[in-house]
Amino acid sequence: MEERITELELRFMHQENTIQELNETVCRQELAIERIERELTLLRNQLYAIEPGAGGKIDVDEPPPHY
Image (cartoon, rainbow, N blue to C red; front, side, top):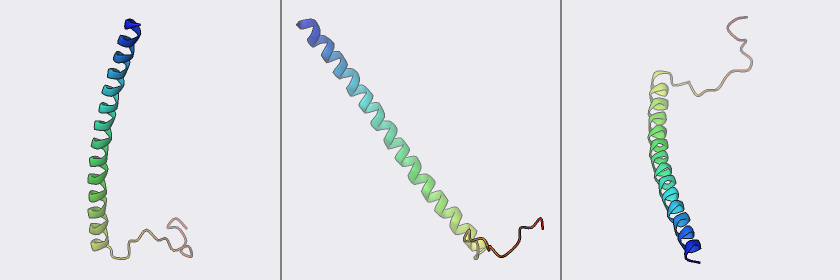
């Protein structure tokens, strides 16, 4: 019985460590995503300042440049 309890305690400690590592990874990823979103917004604003009509819309009536 003592051996089973020790095994369960070891499993629990391993799971706790894994959960903590996953939590830290998720927190780092959240910070990275927030930074990337801010950079994307900044780049989008810079693009609109350079070319105000650049909204990503393509005129379907206009033929591609290679025609």
